[in-house]
Length: 200
Image (spheres, rainbow, N blue to C red):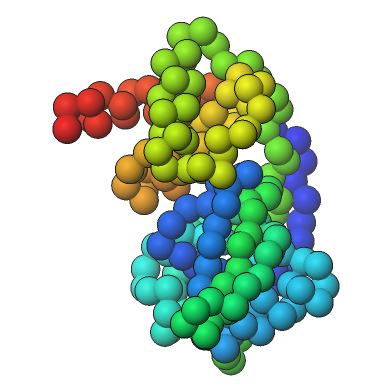
């Protein structure tokens, strides 16, 4: 892996789910600390870090976030029918948190090391079944990916991240797949997990 890039003092949003590079995230924003975070990102064009919650809850007292997460860039805002702010964000680079602090309003901020994007690797022929499975999952669960170019399915990184977000995995499995830095190894782990769903 290439040298990591340091970024100090990024806002972090601990969530009960894992965001992958290229993934889509819809959030309902109602706590003051996160409204301020969204305002900051909109003003500066910056992003916030999404980390899986290891301890605690999404709302209320600050939660303990996982050390490895994904940057989220806000791509759309909308007012929801319930009167709350809705945002759509897209997953960017992965990062590791090196230090965290909690502001007086409860917002967790951290110093992070950005991970470089994974290099493009063609999907080995022994994982062709995973391409077919992803096509079926997208058809039923992720219509926003239906028009994805065919070459995306041939990219081991894209294929693995999309399967990891669509398969009904445990959150610790999702986090482990996020932290893998070899896209072919990620595909191998996903292939080994599949029999569990076929027996169901």
